[in-house]
Image 1 (tube, rainbow, N blue to C red):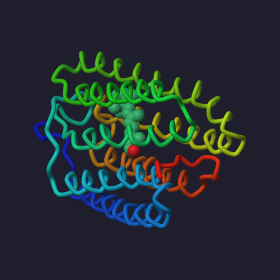
Image 2: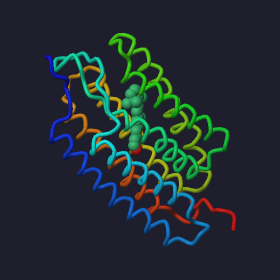
Image 3: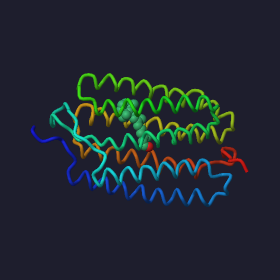
Length: 240
Ligand code: RET
């Protein structure tokens, strides 16, 4: 138990593979954004930004910057490698993803803002929970993060849903589908966190694999599905 539970060669290999997938996602997002006329580029360009940020974050993590060793519990080791670079990615990308979905729903600006603020609190307290030196107080920050997450989910399944249906049945149906996938996928991050950073039950490599699969689903796949399925009624137009 003298060695920290750190990434191995396999963990870095997975990070490089996910970096490759995000590079492809970035190119695809560029294509779907710029084939649209200028006025229709708002939603696709948010998706493009998400992919660019994640590509850079994966380059950092794969090449070995943005991680630190923290005190850890669990069966594996008393120390564990935490890739804090992903929280910096999430700090920018989760607000962008929520902006895409809430603009699609036509949620009023003040409610978009409060959802995004709760999301930022969720990520920052989640980062602090992962870095906290005390194995006990870590769960206090985890609780703050979880409460903020519940607020985000509440805005998405409550008001935003009814707003989406006000924009028409096609928009409502697309919104239902995309928000449903989001709720399931984002909740899975919490499970991975508890098993990884939280309790040390899974290895640092398995954690990288699990977050990698979720990131590819939640960013390029989800974002392209939104843009490609967008009915004309759901467009968010830029000023001419
Ligand atoms: C943490 C740990 C503490 C409790 C909660 C969390 C939630 C994280 C979420 C992350 C979503 C990330 C996405 C990234 C890429 O697109 C920080 C894991 C609630 C919901 C969607």
